[in-house]
Image 1 (cartoon, rainbow, N blue to C red):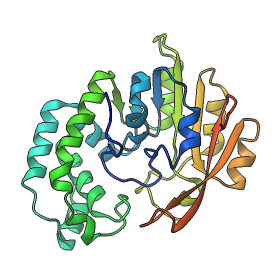
Image 2: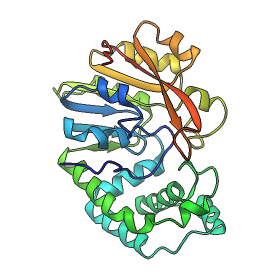
Image 3: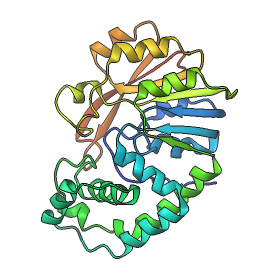
Image 4: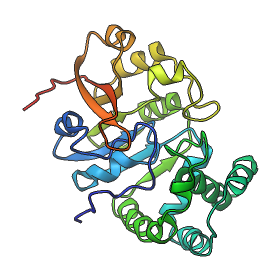
Length: 271
């Protein structure tokens, strides 16, 4: 299946869907992945972008609203309800936006609608504030077709979606009887961002990096980890292979310079 170049659920902090921006990462991905495991999948942007190389996948995220959104996209009946709701949604004004943020949603569909609104009406998708420009954009009309295409990818690739702490993904996989060659991709919250605030949502920023490194050190499967480059991350993972590269973000994609790092347990060959 040939994918549109910008096929995403929504923009999201640290999303890995741009193959030009993150070319060292995508160049490291094996050409064939029998079973992809993502303990920090977010909006599944990485999986969607490499889905043609993947046979099956397990996508996990600790955030219950992100999980609800992914599950609603995967379930064709729930997706139909989600798209019908979007199609009659009026423009979200500032007051509406903050009411949605406060809303306590219980069902998968309600949680998915809430998160989709926050993603598409805040400056970077994280829900930190309101963006008039994004809230009044054409996302109400363009989103349903994109979500239907992602639904096909999820179901064609036999994707399992879970709502666990990352540590439980490692524990469950350690006792799994599934005999498939696995590749892990980990994109945990940026170390520097988690020290500054709740960019990824309340309760979603805390990572015990030493514990995560221990889990990765015990894996026999291939794995890749992405993060913002820092002395802390380099020192912690110094026994593994790593490569740093520059990305830019902002209105013109050049206004903010960031340094990303990829770490893996197999050699990184940059062409």
